[in-house]
Each structure stands twice: as C-alpha cells, then as structure tokens.
Length: 97
Image (cartoon, rainbow, N blue to C red; front, side):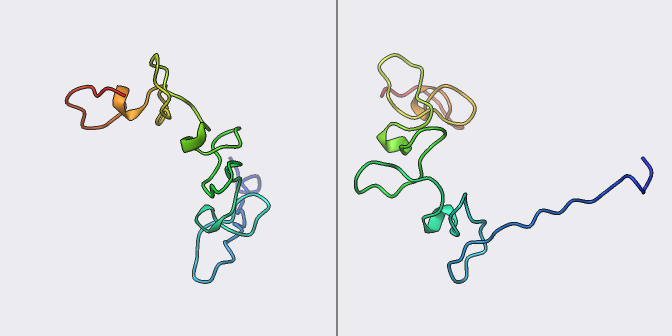
C-alpha cells in the first residue's frame, strides 16, 4: 500500500474527571467504572457495574449464568460455566455449588 493511502488514526480517549485518575471515562459519564461511571445495577443500594445487556450486576443476576442444572452462579470468561463447574485455572477436583 502506498504512503498516500495509509492514514494513521488516533482516537482521543476521554479520561475520568476524578483527580489523579488516568482511566478512561465510560459512556456519557465523565468517570471511569471505579469512580461510578458506566451503567450501574438497578437494585436498591447496589453501586456495582451492570453486566452485558442487563441492568443488574453479577451478584443480582446480571450477565451470563452457568449452564449446569441448578447452578445460578455467573459464568466466567468465554465459557458457559462458573468457576465451580470448570473454569478455574488450577482445578484439581470439581466443587459443588
């Protein structure tokens, strides 16, 4: 590709407005997730981040759930299982929910 067609694109990252914080601001807020930016859980008194397309945090049922029958824990990484059912790195034996 010739140089005339190669264009370097730099995105300006909006930074958190909290003093001393260098993290990126989330969504329409001017704060990072740690300082209250982004989508929050809708449960009363909960200030955790909402997961995926839900309006709840993992503790209140947001995000992917484990596919094992009877398990209601949150699924981890790119799998459909929780840590107890097969996602933990150093698993020696399977735990029960």
